[in-house]
Length: 351
Image 1 (cartoon, rainbow, N blue to C red):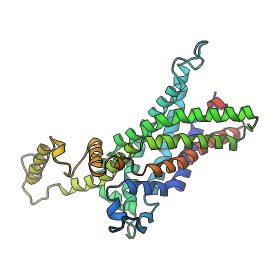
Image 2: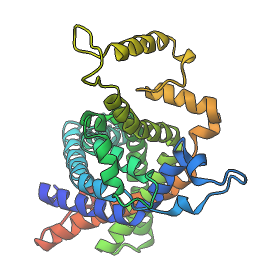
Image 3: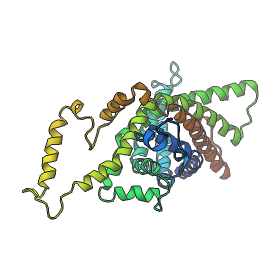
Image 4: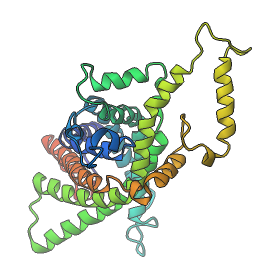
């Protein structure tokens, strides 16, 4: 049995998230800007198409919102993951013919991480929307980038959850791929060190094995899920525009309204928009809420398949560093907190 308490898991997850946010956030900002539909207009020279200095300014814009949200979201993720994994293992007893039980271990890890992501994404989505829109604010303004972004959502705060489906749609396959690969890589590395007689049993060794395994698995999963990440970025960047458009379309006091109190002109425009949107192929340029599917089709029409993989290499690098630090610090933190109380964590109870 693991001697980690829920507090241990929450603290270790929070410290891991805080560490990653501070160290690799600039790479995430660059990835967002690369994947933005405004990348060429805002961050490249019109003549040469080479990046301008603006691409590398304000790389920490929006970091505050992420730090605030990732602390509870990461704690919720790891608590859900650990308890769900323990529950699935409990109801999947080993037998003489099936040492790992009837449910394969990778399936247990993938299922537990998927449940954990659904919980985590509900907390993280507003911060992701604020973060990605803040990352696109042009530096030089006297107003904080996060404050400028929040102002756009003041009259429509529910738009902050625009992108939950896209975020979960990216994170679910990512974690479902990463965690089984991570667990297997860690098992192989530990087995290799045991066979070579190099095992030390220290916190540093545990953290390093976890970091290398998580970074490698995360990179592979990140590259494979890049198209979903590109769509997710576009969905979240469109949330601010939709919030502003909704506010600007509200009826003013001196305009004609219908029997339901709605602006007559706005109602006409809405009806026309609804009619034209019955066939989305005829109105790809219409403003308003777009589904992830339609955004994906727009990217294909504009950039082809290359557009769906934009930022993949940078995301792979970001994930290698981020996942390695994240899970490495998390696991080391769990071992440290248990050892501090004079208790031990069994190897099989680690991530």
